[in-house]
Image 1 (cartoon, each protein chain N blue to C red):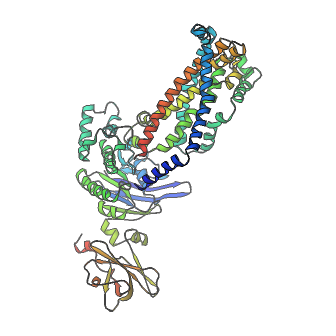
Image 2 (tube, each protein chain N blue to C red; image 1 turned 90 degrees about the vertical axis):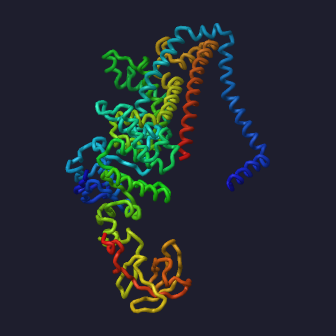
Image 3 (cartoon, rainbow over the protein chains, first blue to last red; image 1 turned 90 degrees about the horizontal axis):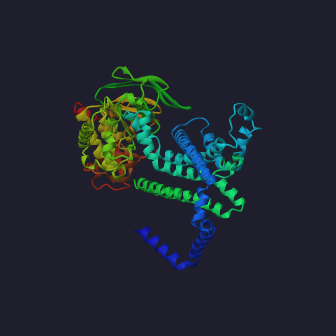
Length: 289
Length: 332
């Protein structure tokens, strides 16, 4: 009662006392949003449709663009499931066990966030390239990693490692181990415990992590660019294909493919929004306890 | 099902959590592990359950060594302090969990499971909330659901970790009486951990008093209270007064005192500092010259010395520790 009155008084005072400051800040936020986020998006779509839907679809359905889309989906399709498994395993060990070197492992999980993607790409060239450490050995066995699909998958994998684990570690730490212990005491096997207790508890956080991971895997440019070799129709992902088209002054095609990427990103964003709302609802329910 | 604990030791790093623990819990007994926080009582309970492995020593259920058995093979019911109900499952699914996790050949049909779950929910008097989720329940309800869940797999022993610790005083009192009654009914060998001596006294058949990783004393509530084996047990089981008499300390409980308005032989004078009615008893705080610690006396509220007594007056008192305890009089 008392606090409610105080809070109400506080609100009305800010409304009467400093309306301009607040309006100015909100206006500034909107300005930044429109200028730097919304406008570029509209321009992308506008440029893409400049010469009508015919050219737009032609650019998207052109074989090299389709190959780029396929490669992007392959890279996402391999790196996201691997990171899902790795992320859950890493989050599990870090949050449920105590062991030596735990803090080092946690720091290492974050490494891809702090290392520039270009350097990540270079690492793979230095390791697996023709002049790299494993280059001659791989060459003898006729295995191509750099400038081929495996290199692109590896680079994508590297930059997306932290997403799932980072999302799950705080969640699992907060939940503790008691429900798992209870499941064991009730006779559940390790797999039953994971499937019936742990996984349902981390479900929404996991979806959120996977969505972020997917978005990043689709959009990754720097690391992939270094290991790709830019072979059209073979080692170009969507972002690389956009760059090539743009550099060839083929603006309409570049923006058409870019808007395809944009559509995928928006889809992912919607998924993220949905899972985030779910998580917040669960947290609110937990906070009520 | 009896539980035998032999020579159990447990260290966490440099901290000796348990030292040479030897304890036998008889079949059908309700035993309290009582001690201050950090005394090792919860660690001992977790070792019995198999959630923690002892460094040395062994645990046997009914003579059969279970030390090397995994948690899920020990068939113990365990109730956690904070219940650890599965938050994404309804009350019904929580209670049914243990039955559904059984290997396919031993698993009862869903109809049998439903029957069993409702039977247990009736036992804990919560059949009407079967469809709710744990977050919609009060603390006392969660506690009873946790108990029903533990009982569903027909455990050989029941272990409870501070079962009433997270509840408010009134619910706690109701629940512990209810637990004592339930134990009468199902007669399952049960061990519960508590730091509350009143709770141990009220519920347990026997009390194991622990301190700093060792067992200080094992005995019935009456025994440990009347014949404490150490100063620690004496102080832990109730309030104590300390009176310095010519360099010798006399320990006595607040009710072990005789009070008088007039000077009598063997009685010491003291100044009345405070008078607190506590219901059936009244507590009088006395200041004795020559010692800092006050003496607390608890006497019946209609005691003759209390009539018209006010602060600052002088009372005469004598420690009365030899007075027989009520249960000895009644021959218990």
